[in-house]
Length: 138
Length: 138
DNA sequence: TAAATTGTTATAGTAACAATAACAAATAGA
DNA sequence: TCTATTTGTTATTGTTACTATAACAATTTA
Image (cartoon, rainbow over all chains, first blue to last red; front, side, top):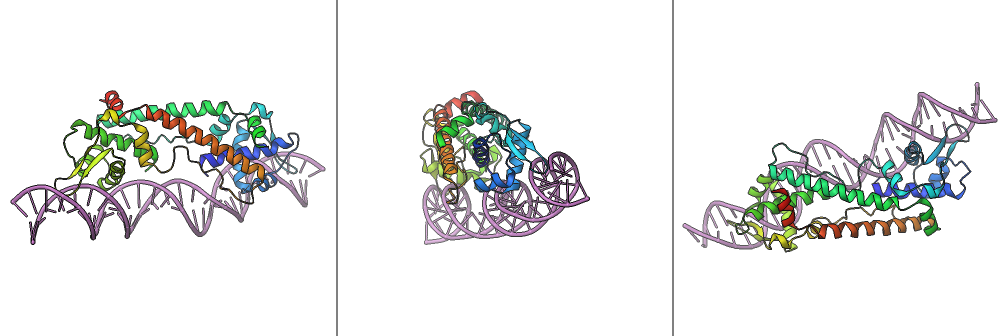
């Protein structure tokens, strides 16, 4: 699952939970409502649980629910939780010891540039709350 | 080869050509100097040739050379040439007709957001010339 | 104790990627 | 004209990554 698909799937799941914030929904129901595999969705939601975005209830009648108001959940923390790699993959040619010094400097240049882009993207995502997405898409 | 690796490899090759802008260098020499496969490099440079960034000379004593001054070559055109996909892959969950209307709206939201990010990235790259990279890394 | 649910691992099939080789087309120069 | 060389593109082969799902231990409620 690509970074962007994970992100949109997560937002769909969280939006579904936001419909009835008090009610616990299990992975089968949520997955059915957004058309993804329940097992895959559980692994996404388990990460969001560690981030403190959703609450997990195990066992009979268990499931998930939002642990915060949707105005207090932003895209950046969702994105950073579910995606270990960064948006703009920083895999410039690996620091091959045979590489010339100038090539290494170019690698460093791109690592710095990509980090800068990454920060820009995360700042942009930080401005976007789950609530604002729901308002725009309801 | 990932987008970012293609980009840094291209810049390394162009920087190498910029050392002696008048001299034609063949793919074996360029590839050797930056530690990549000559065949792979040729396919990168052939795209840059179509973009009008390098000039190609086929046959005996052929090779490549810059077709413009390095102050007139920017990262955005290199990036857009070599990479058909965009930096922030826009593969939100494919428009499954079974998807609920709300899910589709969320897909549209993310497509718009990712396009916006893409424009930001390209604007940033447009500011960066090959010359400025060479100055910083020499 | 039984039923249900998460969280994680395993599995198997498919697709993508990497690195290289191969070769037709083109060209320069003898 | 012939030969050597070089690009541009396709093919190949092995490997890695991904996808979608199943399975099941651990946990929890009643």
